[in-house]
Amino acid sequence: MTELDFFQLLKQEVLLAYQKQYPYFKGNWKSFSSQDIQNLIELVEEKTRQSISEKWIYTHLKAETNSKLPRKDMLDILSQFSGFSGWDEFVFTNREVAVGKKESQSKKGKKYFIGVGFLAVLIVVIAFLVYPGKKPTLKLQLKNEFTNETIQAKEVKAYTMEDNKKVEIPIQNSEIEVAVKDENTKIVIQSPYYKKQEVKVNKGSEKTEILLQPDDYAMMLKAFMKSDIKDWETRKIQLNKILSDNLEVIVMLKNDLGAEYFNKNEFSEKLVIPTESVKRMQILEIKNDNEGKIEFIRIKQ
Image 1: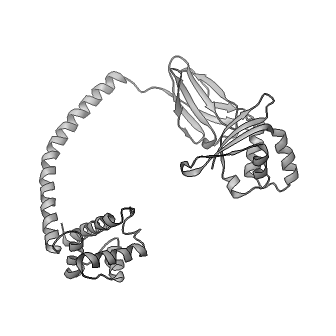
Image 2: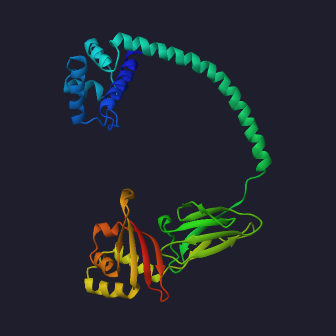
Image 3: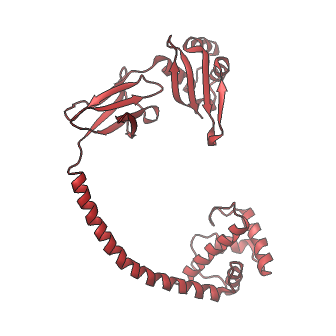
């Protein structure tokens, strides 16, 4: 290791010593603020009875790379702040550690490669016995039944049913990929904006699309929340038609702070004015009453 390499190590030691006094600081030199710099200057003076300037910190410590080694007297100050007698002891100690690690890693490396080789052979044998061949898969595009447009991944969830348990299927580019078997594989598609769809596929399936039927009232609610409709009175009348008088709305707050509750009147008042906060809301769940009106909404901020 060069002396500049040891200086980079010393910079990390200084950060660790600083964090002992200010444990809430979890950043690095790039995020080290002007207040952190003032705190560090005071700590260095208290511990070493010597001073370090703000300009020096910006020049040598906050810099991502250092082309020149700073003066030895400054290196001594930082080494003392980090718990060493000076720069010479810091370099000597870390050089010994580096040599010890290199020898240890050399011995471990030989054992590691032997172990890895054995493990790799074992994995190949097990994989061949358990998975004799790659399972065939079927790709299915999720589309709106009426518009034939693809559906955004954030608006829908897909599952397979295995032993009466839901196993979520990742959705990429509005498409799901399912491992199929000889017998039927049951796929369940759910969305707050579309009616629940259940599809069965097997190795012989030629299906390439799953067409989801939109829930009209849910789609209207989505339009109210995302659009810039300015006719408040018309909006109120339309909301009254699609929302149940017994509506309950749960808004999940950020940072796990709990939830807010709104009834029909309170929620309608929020929707008649298309604010940015309303536009950013994401509907997670919608339930309808016997007449088809929306009676429950779960939203994420």
